[in-house]
Length: 319
Image 1 (tube, rainbow, N blue to C red):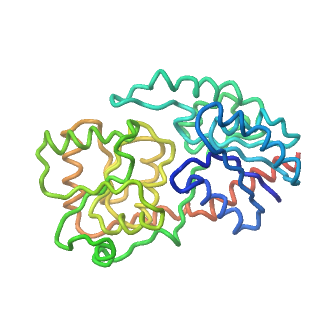
Image 2 (tube, rainbow, N blue to C red):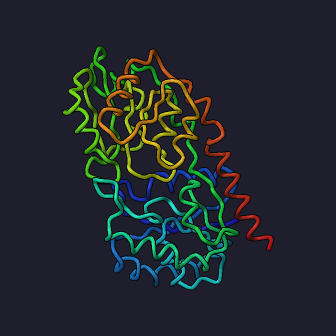
């Protein structure tokens, strides 16, 4: 089985880490995965890539094209491949981008509309969570499959060792915010306001974004608590990675977070208020030791998710 992944190639590390990670998990299961990366941003970059994508498809014998995000889906359609196409909806491509108050930015409604319009052109549509699935009107095509977590990469490292590797102090409480502080969807404004308004002074805040993927596990294991207060998410990889590392978590109730946390002791769901966030941060910092989050993520292990995706491919090829 030969699959072409179509994805943006504009992140600091090239292709999105979770797209590449999914591709690698499929390769481990015996699937031949090739990557087509869109360079540049905006409509011009995607229209410019049409000719190159056509050439890539023409020169190699693929069985299926798997487009990640709405705009890559549009690009694939415009390339007019005589192949079945799968679309993965990740989150804000389906529901838009929230502003600092959690309201959808008017400037991102075009993505919501486009997601609605292009659905008839795909054989299958993969939504990363049930919430994202609500934006899929062609329900017969819908498959809810979250991104998997690599349990070989993300595991519990002794806190003192991780801190030594990062040059952090052993007897300090560290709270980690590992998202982009400038991304309004990630809602860092609420976290910062909570620290100031509720006078939280019992920890040091870590905001190392962006960091290379290999450093993520080090920062997770070096921290006493991960805070994740996004306005909206699909199926946040960071939550699964933190669970795999057994660290306490405070998160807003977005996407499938509540299902992922699965009542794990030491993990807390917060409201979008400074008082509730402060309360839950203190609960997380006062939790003794590590969590058993890893035990609750085994059903999300990469090989398990890879097999689900392969089954979707097989159903397409059988018909």
